[in-house]
Image (cartoon, rainbow over the protein chains, first blue to last red):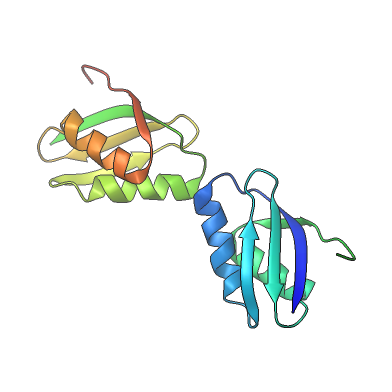
Length: 73
Length: 73
């Protein structure tokens, strides 16, 4: 198992959190997604390490932007 | 045809506008709904005059609150 926490900008409400969660959950191997609208922090647990490319694609599809992708968690 | 414009609080994004639009569109006789997230103004066009009770029920179902219901439009 692997876990990644990054920051997403633009989320304002629970609908936004739902959209982000849905897109990330569709990625292969993702087993859990936690989203904080207030802080913009998104944590993803997955079977393999989540790539920045896959996360970016999902967040972009949801209509938001990754603003911080820490190099190590 | 009748038109009503009122104010809804709590909408923060396009998802919120979609939820409000969907609930109001489900009311009998409603033919058009326009929502401005920025101002909170919601305009409903309907075959019969929209009652405050019906509007309140729809807005509450969507998760928001009517804060101003002008007595005349």
